Picture 1 (cartoon, each protein chain N blue to C red):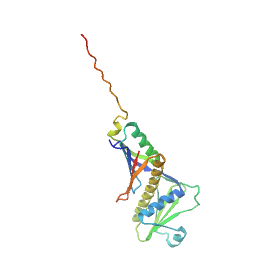
Picture 2: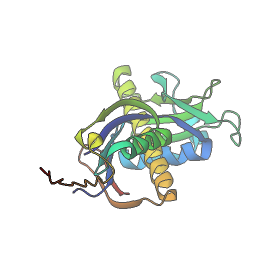
Picture 3: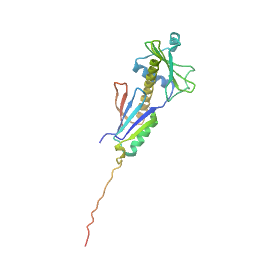
Picture 4: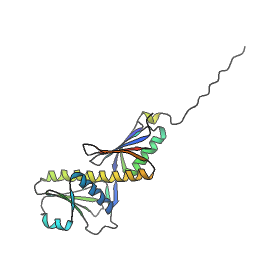
Length: 69
Length: 150
């Protein structure tokens, strides 16, 4: 799994491009909002596959019931 | 990957912060800072192209009336100031260049000033939030690339 990090590119024309990697679910949105708050104005946001992946661990308990009769 | 964003910096700063961004941009483009008084005598009033830095606001507090910052490279002189609305103005003069060329130079310098401002703002704010800068480089096209670990 990718380590959580930002790759930030500041272009000579004055634009800021950010890739948020290794972060899933709502935390990804929160980080995007934080960067927007720091920099100023958001022109474009694209959520990728990782955003839709579950953020929390899911435990599945399976029981097999033996039928009688 | 989780998300891709494209952001436009809002440059809202006090004059000393703007000057620091101008100095950073000047250094990256081979310009040097000069004393504005000495330039005023030499530069003729024709061949001036004026623009301003979009989405900028210079806080007037601590800034003397009419104060400007001037950088120079060859025959190109660029004056940075503040207009009545608070926007950061960029005035480019250069006898050996056309108006179109001067305008293009002004836009390039303005872009670099915004780049410097955004870079310092991001690095400062992310460090305050305990994020780690693990890598930083300047690309061939002049872009600054920073990798930040959460």
